Amino acid sequence: QVQLVESGGGLVQPGGSLTLSCAASGFTLDYYYIGWFRQAPGKEREGVSCISALDDSTFYADSVKGRFTISRDNAKNTVYLQMNSLKPEDTVVYYCAATRAFSSPWYNRGEYDYWGQGTQVTVSS
Image 1: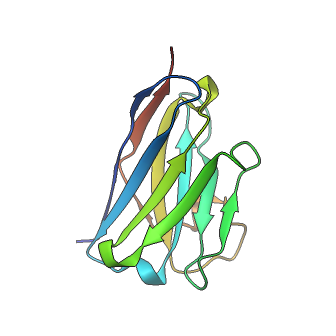
Image 2: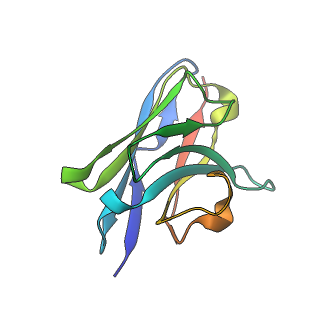
């Protein structure tokens, strides 16, 4: 059974850091592009970051560039999202997703075949 499971969310103060994990089962992440998305209540799910299946190239939304870092550990079949300098507006549910290939930009959520259940990140003092 193909499954993605996010973990690592929680409550953090503004300026703090969190690392989200996306663990895969039922398939090997090595051959997949892995994206992180986030969604606030009543808003569309937006792309945060993506790591390439080919050469581990990384992509970021402008809103997180310089603060977030995506990486993968193929031995653990896991992708990470290191989030630094967190802001209250980063408070949303974060999802990871996987796809073998794109026909449109990485932040198009329609391109992804598999999704995790999401993990809540709350940035508040």
